[in-house]
Amino acid sequence: MNNNMLFGIEYAISILFLVAAIVMPLSIGGYLVKIILFLIAMIFDVIAFTSRYYAYLFIPFIKGRGKRVVLSNEDAYYLSASADSILKKVGDKFIATVYILLPVYTSSTEMNDDQKLEFTQKVSRMVGITRDPARFTTEVLIMNKDDYLRELKDAISQADNEVAQLNLNKNPDKKRMEHYKGKSVMLRNLLNDMGKVTSYEEISYVTVSAYGYKEYEAVANAQQKARELISGISSVFGVPVSIITGNELLKFVEPEYLIPYVTVTTQMNSDLESKVI
Image 1 (cartoon, rainbow, N blue to C red):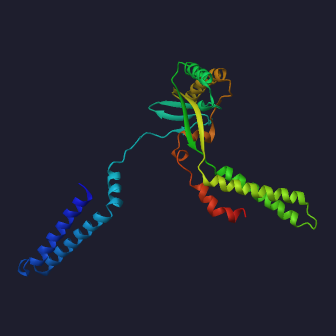
Image 2 (image 1 turned 90 degrees about the horizontal axis):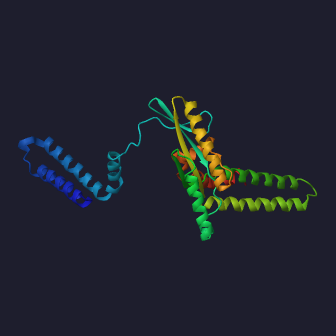
Image 3 (image 1 turned 60 degrees about the vertical axis):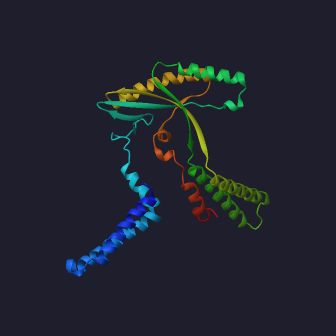
């Protein structure tokens, strides 16, 4: 049923109640019944008007509430005490997952045919390193630039302070003055450019899981599998491979790390002049 049909039905109902209120004799129900019919006609008229012009606002909300999908009612994942695994309890077992960072420094667009073939062979060898199930993934994440922007602002403040201190001298060092002024301008330009665009980072990684009846047992089993994978991957690709730990693990399990950060441009616009300039 489209919006026009819904509007027609609601408007027709309002007209029917209005006509009933007008033609109904006072001897049947008196003024009270007429007033009630007028109110009902008015309510349907308002509903018809609302559905005609504002259906796009409330209909998606109503339908969305009715089609909400619950992804999982189980306990959430959590970080292990050693901060090197993601844990989840399933029944009476604990499942630990380890994330292994795989540095990839080249792109296929930069390779010739022979290099592409060699890289493909390396990937095939890497997949066959372990008999245990492992997942090889490359994904693009939106970077949180807040920390980097904060460092830029601190550097700008430091440069401005140096300029202010030099101005206090009767005979300031002109070379140092020009150095810090140029540094401040350069950092401000970099700060402005960083806030205008969204930055992405590409991460390639391998995940391997293991279970145990205790947390430490699951973590130890997963770490053992990870060390075997690391040894094989390092020999195949000739790159330093490491286990992802701490807050870096949140990039792969927390939705907040997968959506754009609004604090970058917001902080740029609201706090830059008050904190830096």
